[in-house]
Image 1 (cartoon, rainbow, N blue to C red):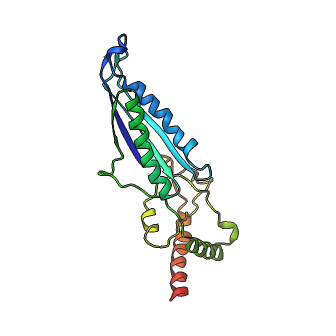
Image 2: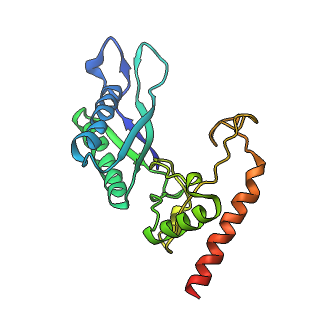
Image 3: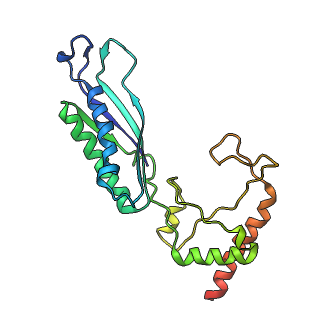
Length: 212
């Protein structure tokens, strides 16, 4: 989930800071305080991330600006933690800005984009996928991927029906298929496509046969 906050103060000369309301100071305090949400409010065993990735107050070196815009992203492994982060981020930014006499608007872009919930595998579907994959490919070709903080729209399926999200391995160093999906050098070993199709079809076929 991404969002930004516009922190508004009052422009003034850098040499006369007492005649301004400094949004840079307010935004800086907000950035620091946001890091305390995960480190001091969250269970260390409940993985969460809050990252501020942009900070824009203009480029005039002699002026305190009217506004500063900060932005970033946050992630969590559960819906409860996710929506708690959303609430606390807004509270922290607004309250920290008010300490420095600034006003704030926080936008999580909910009107323009969708909030992606965590992707959580159903236990029974996970075991089903594991059984089918190991039967077809052997136990040495099945690996458990560590949890990760990437956003995934497959999560909407998992909220409605029991589901399991899995990858088909495409790494092939000989072909140069060694980069992740977000890399401009990403490519796949197309020889794995029939294997992936067979696994996918077998998962569905066996599921229907066992429950038919």
